[in-house]
Image 1 (cartoon, rainbow, N blue to C red):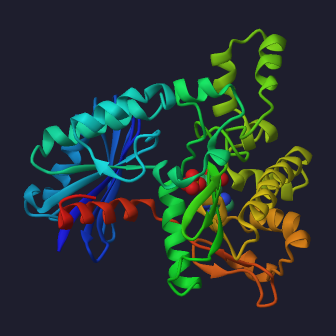
Image 2 (image 1 turned 180 degrees about the vertical axis):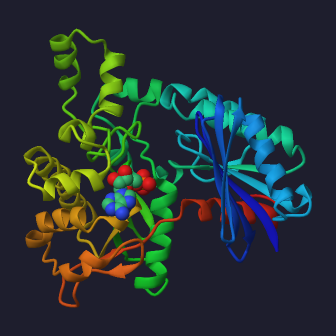
Length: 402
Ligand code: AMP
């Protein structure tokens, strides 16, 4: 038995989950929010407890101290020595990481060097790593990358049709994201629906949450994914545009007088469900307004579904057919309304037969939505990115490497 910590450090937050491995038992989880503020929020959940304490949390180091103190204070562990590995989620692994890696100074430098590719997360990952390293200097740390699952893509799938020298010189290409989630979903689907045999399986994984991406998976490996150089690409999302004609940037800058950075911010934070509906980035609000007849909300839902449906069609061709479609993440797991809107857009072409009455009842649990006569099986599977981090931590402890 070993205890490992899965960590997701953001710019002002730090999510954590302590596991007992190899049982994959969650001992506690929590979130430190509003780091850098006098009214920071420390949160921890264990057993039936759900504790939130507002207090000054001026930096990540203080956040980590609070987490470790709480583990002892609430009797979750007796000594910090029980933690054998800390696994950090890292959004961008660029061309360097095709699997999880030791989070040491050398790799920290590589991650930091990719800050231009991920200015939002890379500095936060480094800060989180440093804070844990200071508190637990003897404990090995690993980095688990959102991009590594996508490193099996072929150049035809990851290159952009820009001057080749620019792709090469600036490493400007599709990296994808949500890879840890797509990998988890593919592994579970292969166990549950392909008798554990990856070979020959053709899976389309739809991770649709506030960030959304689709991944075409053959033989258990990624062949194509919708997110691009950054998570801005691909399908429409909560606040992100997804793919656009690049001239939209130039045209709107000219029209509005805004510069590229301001417009980029709008494409990332004020577009998608929020931008089109003018209501919210949350499907629950958009859905409620659509059901009351709000025309913009109805249009938003249709646009969202169409963008996903278009990629499903594209990946049907890319995979040479699909055996299984997975819906996952906040929207995919919980929104019957959006699942239906997407499935209705593709069902005729793909020969899908869906039990929509069942669909209406499925929320946050694994379930087969298609009927036995459907040409493609359609399932909902809740994702679990943290357990993938915990599994790699356990591998690191037992093998000494990943
Ligand atoms: P995620 O980023 O995977 O946590 O997904 C968060 C998003 O999922 C929210 O912004 C909502 O749009 C959507 N969502 C979460 N719960 C529900 C629910 N019960 N019904 C509909 N949509 C939901």
